[in-house]
Length: 303
Image 1: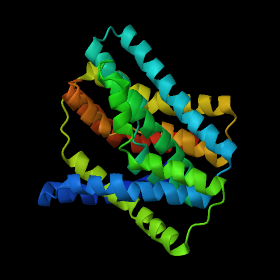
Image 2 (image 1 turned 120 degrees about the vertical axis):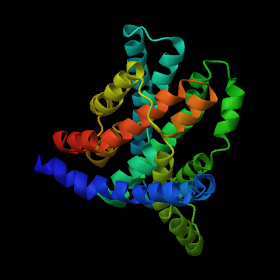
Image 3 (image 1 turned 90 degrees about the vertical axis):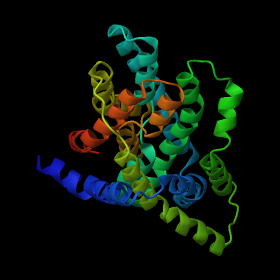
Image 4 (image 1 turned 45 degrees about the vertical axis):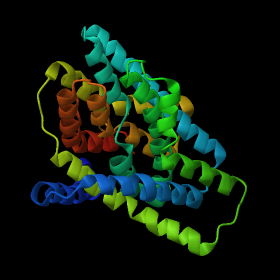
């Protein structure tokens, strides 16, 4: 119990304190969050991805293993969600909504921050791989599933190509694979910008939570919460063992797999009419419950 409390206070509480600042800004002042989100998406996040990967010099084999972990984990979570939907006799819309919230997690402003607080920059670099890979899947497979197969792959790919972090990740891999020198002032500038990503992301997370309202739909919420918060870390352990991940790679990947659903899933639910009130409830409740489930997973799994 003491270990769980330690993880909560030292690693998770700081995340929610910063997010609380964003929550207060949104509730009391009404700060517009869209410009901040745009800055994170187009500037700060790509800089963080690039600086973390270049600075880490992750071996190619480990990089591929971490990316493969993400792909397998996301797909298996989707399979678990689909089986659960069939067993519960959920309708088509509810099934799609369940798939989206169990497959795609908040690996950015929550997952990357937690891994950095717990493991420092080496942990952050490995978490960046999960974040980037899962985001690619979210902007392609996630959108395709949400549209119930009606959106052409070309359109989904076009949306992905507007995501700057993908270019940052590819550029970073090219730079350190071919030992391309980067002028020190340029690299330092990218590092400074990247350092601003996490605090701003946490502020945006708090602002997003301030706008959420719960509308209970336990027929969908109950299995989603169980699969995402309990099944997530358990499946993460299984996939990590399957791929032979050890050390920081194993720990950071399992933590990322334990995260609550991404806030972006609410946007998908709204865009494609996938019971937005229910999805919003799942994201809010799972985010509020996640400190306890994640701290327990970290402690019991010795992460």
